Length: 367
Ligand code: NAI
Image (cartoon, rainbow, N blue to C red; front, side, top):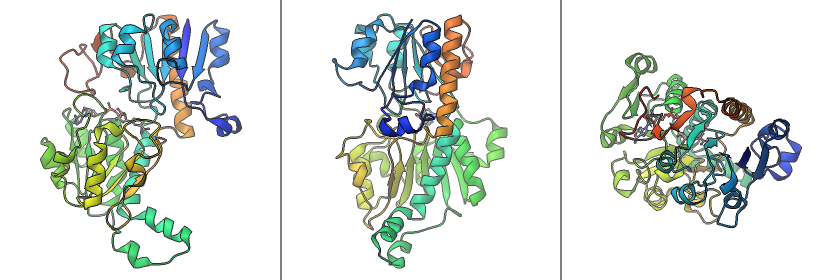
């Protein structure tokens, strides 16, 4: 079989650190294994445009491996016009929104990912981002590096997480782990909004209350963390209209997908003070252009921005887990064995998950 992988270039870091598995250099640690099985394994980071290695190799590929960190966008057009042999689109990580799932269904391509592999890594990052924003950390650190000392300039916009209302938009694996992790901070209340409400025993154990109306949910939260996948129902969801329904001065942490939030609307809401901070590691295109407004936007007090490149789910611990999971999915695929149900996003022309928006085309018994 021909297996095509689009990974990110790790440069000197990847040569010095072999645990950086999801790089072009270290090839998910699978090159010799795949070779020993007689498969052709092509690895590239070149993913944009018709002359990219990705698009040139796609027509012959049986399996495509991508990651959300350096996404090769497998669009409907590419699926219909170029990916004629493709049978499996495998995401090394979590989140397959860079694949047109409806087109994959049309062509009966299986889309699978390593569900759960990096959810703890992301949840930890979310808690870090919340503290970063609420405690006004970034301007304080920049001040220390500059050699200045003006405590009031920082403290005038620094708060405690204790006593705040914290809500997650999307309460699946990551959303729940975030709620569990922030509970010991003694928030005033933990809320969630999800069209798949949690089982009562789990919600009770977390102490989380479901608010079924999105605007009511947003209007009550001091901190909103976004943990829903990107799909037709969430693309551009947080736009200038919806931002008016947030509590004034709320903080937003989005480690789900950049395109859930409108690029300009977020910048304007931050600059006007409608929101007090925005943090996360996901961008509406990746790599983000140098002039992307989220790199430099600030609130009126010169803080409120804790953006990073997309790395929350690609810690060295996470890379080991999703590289192992990718190998497991491939092994089952080669042997014709069933996949772990939780790893399957679409199969046989049907959705195998309920996480990707309202859809009538669900497989019976999907997760
Ligand atoms: P999950 O499938 O366990 O949970 C997602 C939840 O979102 C589900 O409960 C679903 O019902 C809910 N949801 C879907 N659409 C919604 C909507 N319109 N409104 C409210 N809730 C909605 O997924 P998991 O593992 O928690 O991951 C969530 C997302 O986080 C992934 O899809 C991915 O985009 C992102 N992610 C980001 C990473 C990073 O490195 N920054 C790494 C891993 C995941």
